[in-house]
Every structure is written in structure tokens, then in C-alpha cells.
Image 1 (cartoon, helix red, strand yellow):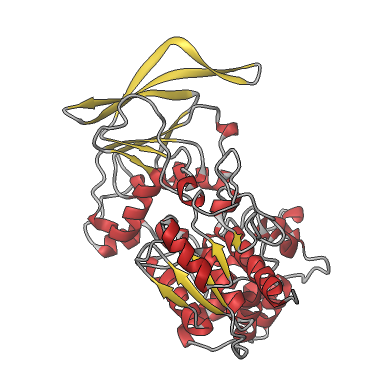
Image 2 (spheres, rainbow, N blue to C red; image 1 turned 135 degrees about the vertical axis):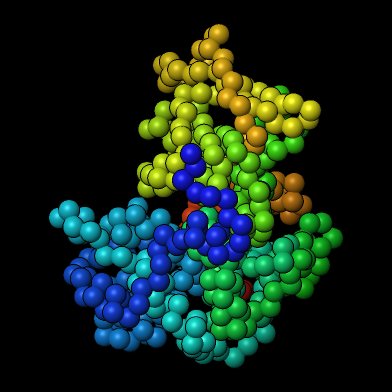
Length: 444
């Protein structure tokens, strides 16, 4: 029997997807901030890709200087609120907290971060004073964490910034690709509105840059261009049956769920293929949408999965069953619709994954979701002169400056790093913004 009933209303959906990291109230924030030891070497800061001065903002919260705490956070990470909720803090800042060494619960840094930034968002506090315009313009392709972090950094340095976004909402992965129990759409978009008002960049929505002619226009009109386009759709497995109805990519399923909530009808039996964090999200979400049977199938052992352990724990808590050492060899159908998956058992021999002959078996399913990696947008990137991609389709870039082989183009986020966390993209976008400014303002 399913642990969750199919949600019939928005309130049902919110109950099934109750927030993993709910916002603290003032009393909770006071007592939690009091626990911080303010370590002189602060391993939590080192563990954060954006390098936020965590002991400082915690001290500011404890002194009831919440606005100051929020400014400390936003000076390092424009996605401060979102990252407090969606970051894998268990393996980043909180995972580095010295309390772990004493087997004591670490400081809840993520919740404190969202507490402080959420307060200034609700109060619409102006934290920064922008400098006079320097007359230089930068175009940004993609309004995700990398692109908007780059935009904020450049606006703080006097640049005019215009962002071109293919979809009708900002924030990329944060609103389209994160499990709803980590952050709500409302929370994501409130922070985006706050950033847009705070830093004054322009965003052109539903404006996909996709042709050589469009790129040439940008090259003519702007001094530099930042690429923050993320990854493409879920890549196919190239096995028989992938054209069947109700066979879908995990990224596309998560996006649909984020946009349509309880209007998405999940059937009784679902098989999710994959062992990464996206597979965990898709499996957990199907279970929370009331599917009677959700099976997470991975071709290797549990220890080989790319997902964080705490993400797998969430999946198990939602009632998802697991199937390991089983590789999908065909998607089976009935009248054009998915009816199941044919698997073959696997074994690891001399470090190589091998299919075991005559070990085939079938798992019946109404839906099959593949979470087996995303395609790269190499066709688009190939339109940019002198911009290289590597064998995995990632942009070849200078990880220190963000600059690509075409000096006018900079990059960051998933299209360059291959697919990491929101906080990595935010850090890379901000760093690229700093170096774009340095490059454009240096004497030639």
C-alpha cells in the first residue's frame, strides 16, 4: 500500500511535499545561532563553493542584525535563500561542521541562511547601492543560477546587463528541476523578483538564442557574453521501445511536476532507471504523488550510485523499492504504451560491468522514467567561433576566469562543469562576472 494518497488539491500536494527544511522562527534562529563555536579556521566556509563568511552571518543573526546577516550572505551568493534550502548541506557546510567530530548535530547553517535572506526578501530591503553606469554592456544567455549570479556581480560594478531566457521564468534548475519538498515555486520566484529589483538587470523571457545570426547580433551589441545555458534534455538509452508512450526523461517529469503540481496524474506502477540524485528526486516524487509501486532500478550496486546517501534515505522513507545490478535492455509495450521493462542481471568482472547471459526478467510498469544523464547542447555551442567542447560535450573554459577559447565569451554552470549543484553554478557565475569586469576595464 502506498504511503501517500494521490493529491487532489494544492493543499494535498503541499502536505505530500512538506518542506524538508522549513523556515525557522526568530526564537529558533536565536538558539540555533547560539550553538555556533565561531571556529577560527571555519571549515564550513571552506566547504561552501561560494565561500560565504558563515560564522559572521550566524553571529549577526544571534545579535538580531538579520539585515546584516543577509547582506553577508548575498555578497557571496546571490542565490542565498534558495541555496539555504536546496544545497546538499549535509555534504557541504554542515557536513564540515566541527560538531560532527564530537557526534553532535551540526549547526543548521542552511536553515539559518534562509531565515536571514527570507526576512529581507519579505521586507524588500535594499541591501546594495549600485555604482554609476560605466557605459559597457554584457549579454547573458540563460537566467539560471550561473547567469543571474553573473548579472548581479556585473551590476554591482556598473555594467548594463541584459539576460536572454528561453523559458517564461527565471532561476533555471531551481524552479524547474528541484524536488518540490526542497523549495516551493513561490519561494524561488520571490527571490528572483527581489534580485531583479535589487540589481536592476533586464530579462527577456521566452527569448531563446539559437541561431548564428542571433549570436552575431549579440557580439555586435555587447562587449562580452556569458553562457549559462545549463544542460539539455534527458539523453536516450538507445534500447528498443524508447518511442513508447509513458516513457519519459526524469528532468522533463520533474519540470512538469514543478509547474503543474497536483494536476499531474501518476499511475499505479512506476519504474525509475538510474542511481543519481535526479533519479532519487523522480522516484521520491512519484511515491509522494500516490503511485502504489515505485521501483528504483540501477545497473550497479548501491555503493556505486552517484546519489548522496541522504537522498537515497529520502527515497526509502517514501516507500520506494530498489532493484540493483539490473540493466534495462528493452522497454516493453502494449498498444503503443509502456507495459514494463526487460532487465538483464549484471556482474562486475575485473572492474567491467557485464551482463549475465540468460538472466533476463521483466518488471511490469505503467510509466518508465529514465534518469540516466542529460544531453549537452553542443549544436548550439558549435555556432560560436573558436569555442571548444570536450569529449563529454562540456564547454572548454578557464575555471579560474570563466573565459572560453573565444575571449568575448565566458561560461559557468552545468554547460561548463558538466552538471553540479545550484551553489556551484552561482559561484562560477559570480566569479566570471568579476573577471569579465576585470577584462573589460583593463587598459588594452
